[in-house]
Image (cartoon, rainbow, N blue to C red):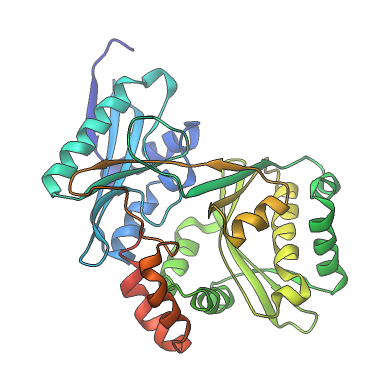
Length: 349
């Protein structure tokens, strides 16, 4: 079979079942490689997508999902994938390096035809040490132990005390049927940090499309007041708490610590083996928070091909040129921020 030629093809809806079967079986693939992200990216954010795959003898052996992000403010890029922390090429080991090389060549040819400023692969693992890289982001992944109490004891002492404080405060964790409480906490939280919120319909669509693999958990006080919420994804044997928000009172009640413990506890009971704490920027509060849980940062290998840029783009809140914008955004009324935010953030990715 290895001697048969590889073909590069473009995804169509008829390929969805076998594309997703490949993604769920391939060790290099992630939740964000699933085909449903194509429709969500096009429907919610109106970005043109190009989902490519390598096929040998009728079998998919590698995939590369791409989306074109075009903005007068943030530039023109071809990204794998916007609004996702992981992306790039996922391939069966026996298909490398041929399938990877062919898909990369096709992506570069597409990038040049589109006239983008750069091509971005959000790899989990490095592929090209000589390509320009974004060194700002890390991810945090750790094994979930088989027994619930062992996971509690694996949390470092000071952080474990915060979890127990949340329990003593009588906090309650509930699984929501919709994204209403989550979005209210999330939108207020990101506005306080000076960044635009993604549209509510994005989260509603995730909840609808991924079904039981997309779960919203909300923490309330003993009186039922929402304090903190998180939207998580399940993929294979992993749990990925991905989007989160909290009330100003959450810290007082240790609601965030309790929230993530509840996510971990429920994932353990569900049989998950990996807790993926997600991406954080080096040196930020979330970075420190995750380290305090005993997670070690793992650098993400975001690799670039630059065409009309001198350096790797820095479209993130750490860029000093956005300081004034962030300061102004924090002062906007929440309703105004929620109205304007989706028009801005769709081009950030």
